Amino acid sequence: LNSPDFAKQAVLVSFVFLALFAWIIKSLVVGSFSIKTNKFNVALLVLLASYLVASLFSVFKYYSFWGLPQVPSESLLSVICFALLFFLVSNNFTKEHIVHSLFIVSLSFFETPRPLWYINPRLYCAAAYP
Image (cartoon, rainbow, N blue to C red; front, top):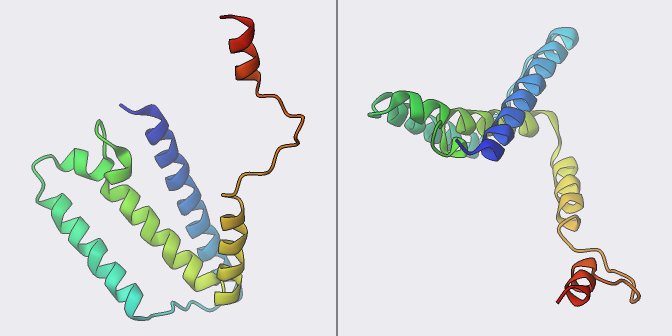
């Protein structure tokens, strides 16, 4: 069992079902329920259906659904959660909000510059203890 992968899957499942619950509550409060449809959503549903069929006809049905004791990120549950997350994001946010959020997230991948006087503690310890 790969515990970091399992913890990530638990956080993903919890977050997605909490977001789904909030979306359902919002729809009930507002009084309208709408789902945007386009070609990409249909393609994602076909992919999700193929994962479901593959899991149903799998030799190890339990492992293919939960992903345990193998890699949990390759399970049907993870694919369902990612698909639900995509549908929730695409139905609740506009294109401008999504592009703006992706831009902010992409900025976080760049390393922040360190000052010139920064000393790497690992190098200092390696030099102190030969």
